Length: 401
Image (cartoon, rainbow, N blue to C red; front, top):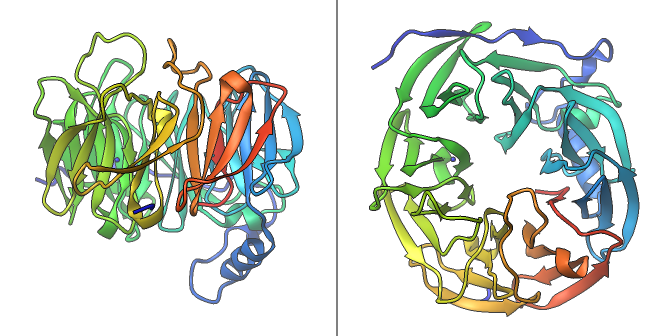
């Protein structure tokens, strides 16, 4: 048991060469290419590493022993996202997306400049960055940073009609899915087909108020969260999945690309204070269904506390201090692993509070109250390593996805 009618609208998608030299850095994705060889070599030589932020700094930990390998000074609050290449992590700062090399380790000078840098999405051999302050999407080959020798790789960009807090994803056939919104509100998403240096809109849906987050399940079924359910894109079309509650907000999708089942966070009270949640949304992308399921009495979680792991199960870090193992097909809790002391959710989303990230069968749990990070074998529930830091850990990212 242990175990997010064709309208003919064109956007601008300028081909932006973001580096002044090293033209070979934009590698091909064909089999047997130099890109594949570089990626394979990097994977063979890489050891698991975990990046952990704290106030004014970021630490790189050995993924097995949790020994602190190196620490770097940063801004007061920064965010972390894996680049997807098995080596690099993006540190989101006021300047944009800064590359943290976890193997060197080094906080590099490589920065994808962005105003209000936001979501990072990895899928189908591409990494996609979204700048909230401008509405610009930047797209590059996921392995390109491994080949760029410290330079920014070749990338393409898409400029949204208006800036907003959004997200984009590129499917394997090149279709760009991106959110619709402005500084005041967000309403849905559209699908764009590459047309030379432009994009042509092929589908849209604006029945997703407050659209936020995305996740890609099996067969490239993409789910976005809405304030009244979710928005599903599959087989070239959008479908609204209505929540059973008048306000049933899903803001984050926790997915496995080998499972059609999606787990989302779920909130029913728009006026609730704090960030503790007691229900999850279970979505079946094949059946097109959304069902809220309550956690056991006395157990809550935050958006930082859900991952997918072994056997495509969901693992939820509860306020009782345990990781609860959920079958996303039924919502049944099949096991629980005590890890940290009971805790309360934060008053502000940026405040340090227990967080969960995963690599393969190992979960990494941040416990700010004790200044500790723990490694947990999700197949057994065993805590395999722990470390006490000099600072309260906040966000985390593993270098290998």
